[in-house]
Length: 137
Image (cartoon, rainbow, N blue to C red; front, side, top):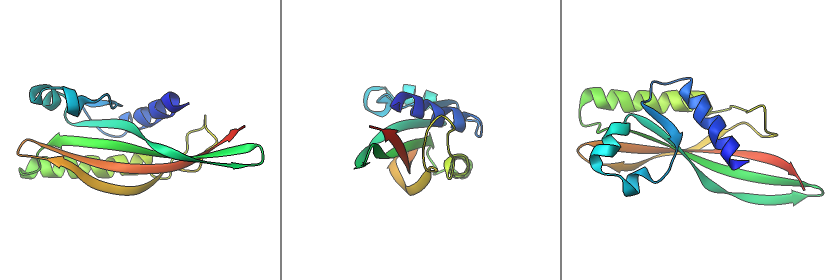
């Protein structure tokens, strides 16, 4: 289910913004060279952050947290700053309050947005979305 849910988020983001790269996060910031990372930008990378489980009778509720990493060239330049803010707003607009038809879920809800990393060439923000999925036990 997690793969399908991640893909649904990726597909939704692809419909709204002109990112060069939109996909599930595969450790790019940890294992790729600076040049390779810059080649991905602007990008939106989706990662499952974790979840909590609760059970009521025969129904298991799974509260899931997903982070969308939005990364662009550094916002020290006016054009780049405008770009990263535009991508953050577009991503939030696309995902906040969305339901995916294939899942018994509450709407995605943005709960946090924060700066993850920045230097003179790269800026990355994380947007955290939560939802609750009901699964039959």
